[in-house]
Every structure is written in C-alpha cells, then in structure tokens.
Image: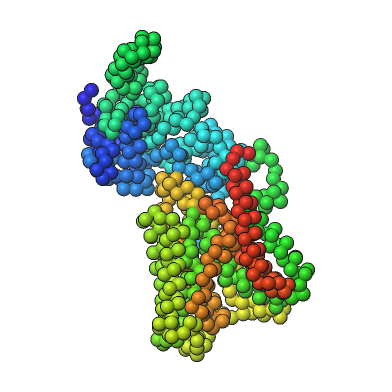
Length: 282
Length: 344
C-alpha cells in the first residue's frame, strides 16, 4: 500500500491536484501526506471513518482552512486558498453536510445567498427578485425537484430536497469542482439513491466531483478514483480499475484489524460469533 | 422562463389577510391599534394634535434606535451600549462647542466619527474574540457611561450641557435636527421625519438589497453564510457601526430639540430598544424580524408612556406593561418561528 502520487492523464490538467498535503492545528497533526487528483467529468471519492481527516481535507479544498504542508494545485497552478470566496472564484464549490442553508430564509434567497443578482444603478441597486425566484424554480425543476413555492422557508424541505437544492445551487453558479461532504449520511436508502443520481448527473455535465463519504457502497457505483484516509493519513489513492468493491470495503473496515478482532473473540467467546464475523469479511 | 413565472396551481390562493398575518410585524400592528383606540377612548388629550405630537416625539427617538437595534438583532447580535451612545454623542458636541469653541459642524462630525469608531470596535471585538456581543457591549456601555458622567464633569464641571443656543451657527443644525412643523395645531418634530426615513431605508435595505439578505443570513446561520461566501465580518461590523450611527443621530436629535443634554441621557434605554424590536417580531436568536415592526414597537412604547400620564396613573406602570408586552411578544415569536421551520 504505497502512497503513490497520482499521475495525471496525459493531455488533461487535473482541475485539482494535491501533493503530500497536510494540515496542523498548533501541535495537532490533523492531516498529512495526502495526494490525489480531481479530473473533469470524474468522481474522486474520499473515504474514511469518523476522525480520519475527511473534514480537514474538505476545509483545505474549500478554502476554509489553508493547508500547512504540501501543495495544492488548481488547474496546474499552485494555490493557497484562504477564504471560501477564493475557492468559489476558482470554481470550487462545497456542499456541506449541514448544507450551508439558512433554515428561516426562503428557498430562493438561500439559492442565491452570497451570489445575489441585482438590478438598477448603485444608489438604488436592489435584488432582482423576479429573476431569482423564476431561476430558482427552473433550476430546481431541472434537477427534478418540483417545488410548490420558492418563498417557503428552506427549513420546511426534506433532507434530500435540501441536499439537491444545495447541489443545484453549486452547479448553477458555475462550479467546475463540486465537493460533497457526506451527502448521503443523514438520508434513507431511497433519498440516498436520488442524491447519488445527481452526483452522476453532475459528472456527466463534465464537473469534477469530490465525494466524501464513509460508505463504500455509496462511493463505489459513482466513483472513478478512491482515496482512503485513516487517522489523518492517506492509505492510498486508486483508480477504479485497481480496486474492487470488496477491496474497498475491507480497507475501509480496516481488514487486518477486523481479522485480529475475530481471532481474539474466538479465543474468549468461542467460535460462533467469530465465525459470523469472518463470514462478514470479504 | 414563462412556465416558471406562472403561479403554481398547487399553491392555494392565500388571502391578503393571511399574508399580512404571517409578517413578523403583524402582532405589533394589532397591539398598536388596540392601544391607540384604548387611550383615545379613555383620555381626552391622547388623540388631540398636541397630545399626538408628544407621544410621537417620544416614540421617534426610541424608534430610530429600535430599528437599528432590530437590524443588529436580525444579524444575530445585541448592542447594550446603544443607549449610552445617544448621550455620549450629544455630550461630545456640547462639550466641544460650549467649552472649546469648536465649530458646531466640525463638532457634529467629530461626534459621528467617534460613534462609528466605538461601533466598529464593538463589532471587531465580538468577531475577533467570538465572545457574546451581550458581554462585549455591556463593557462598552459601562465605559461610555463612565465617560459621560465623569468626563463631562471633569471637563465642564457640570452634569448637563448649558449655553448651546449661543454657540455660533447653532440654528443651522437645529433646523435639521430640532425644528418642528405645525400640523393641525400639533407640532411634528424633525425626529419624527427622521424616524420614518430611517424605518423606510432600513426596510428597503433589509428586504430588497444584497446586504439585507446577508443580514438575515449571518443572524440565521452564521457558519452557513460564511460557507456560501457572505462577508460575515463586514456585515456584522457594519451592523454595529449602523447602531452606533443611529445612536449619534438620536444624540443630535435630543441635543438640538431640547438644546441641552444630560450626562446620564440614554442610560437604561438600551433594553427599551431591544423590547421594541422583540415586540416588533425580532427573534432573540437572530435571523428573523422586521424594521417596520421595531418602529411599531417604539410607537407602542411612546403611546403607552404618554397614555399613562394622560390617564393619571402612576408612571411606573409603564415598566410592568413593558414586561408583559415583552413576554407576550417572545411567546408569539417563538410560535411563529416554529411554524416557519416545520413542514406545512
């Protein structure tokens, strides 16, 4: 399991490339030696259990917390993102787990929040409310969400709907790279399927997608490249061709650790449970 | 785009009344009407031009502050130094002109600059330290109060500004801040027009501009707002400076209407502003409220304040009344918020 720096495909500059990137908060090393690439029209999955460093990795790409080690290249140019706005200007949009929506505000105000469309000369420059309302409605309709009323507070929508509003918003504002932070974590099976379809849709549109999850079953069907994190370190960065779902699952679960746990259980509790556990292992 | 602009057939037609009821300020509007009718019916002086002139004037200076404080509260913060600021800015002008002979316009500008600096300081402290604005501005409140009381006494040896009217060019700013026009025999003071103007501008900013969108967002969900690129720091510091600026405006209105200012002016009023904003529909947790509502809250305050006098009751009943209004409004607002946040 060597940490190989992913070689970009010939002729295409990756949208994002990270090389041995790391982040320290004071004396805490939250992340180190992480390398991967994000190409246009591909989904790069970042997998890891809780506390593996996924959040830190997102924050670096999203511009929330600049990295302290290694290099971050956007379109082949080295960058130090120091604000979310800077990342957005480079076309890197992040859809956070909490969806970055303001529950009490209407859907259309949320959709355009931070990128409001205005009309009129400076002293009376005002929000173009008609345009924003109708755009919100049509953009959401294109993503398959048919809203009754874009003036309703976004807090009244279901989790899946809010997720899709957030994705539609990022796509509309010209995101070239879409970072999705555990988009399926809080959703049921059916809603997860809906969200995964939008991920595939975004990829078809030629976006580079960074899909962060702890669920290999959600990652594998849509992913083109898989980067695994554990305890703040990269466990490797693989194209789909080099990795099966079974490999992915066992790496995620920490295959060897589970095997030794099964062995311990066998000694202390008899064979039944251990046999069951072994059967679960791929 | 035509299909999108057409009203969705699944949305039931909501009557205008229902739509008005859903606005944050509707509770305050209803209460204001009830209170007006009550005092108009029970006292002789209340609904006369001269009576109305008195309570409108009282409501206007409170109202300007309440509107600014409402914007700040929608943005998720408090400013307890707002009351003391009204006295501070008036005192600065008074001391600089009567004691040091500074040109009155220069003194007014110096006062404004100082107010904005204090406002910015409030904002920067809150944003940089992450401390609750309640504590930070409580600190500034006491500092300002101390300067108002001790500073004034040390510089002019008195607790009130005297001799404002003999300051050169006094009549110029007095025309803008302290004059009145007669309507049906009742004087309408300049402060009332300022109040209406401030409320109108605040409402427009809040509902129709980018900045208004940002104010709702930073108060409703600050992290989310930051994540989508809203300049949270600038928005909040701007709000604190706006409140301080409003404090300056009210300081000028008080100074030039009465031609004097006491060193304890405004102290204790900071909570009145917050009560007016809450009565007007602002949530204490931020992200929801209205400027018109806060103006109506101040109108209620002004009417009750004067109505109690006309009724011949003990003035201190005002306090009890305000407490009841505050509690009622908070309960109503909570109910409205819960309804807004859950699915229909």
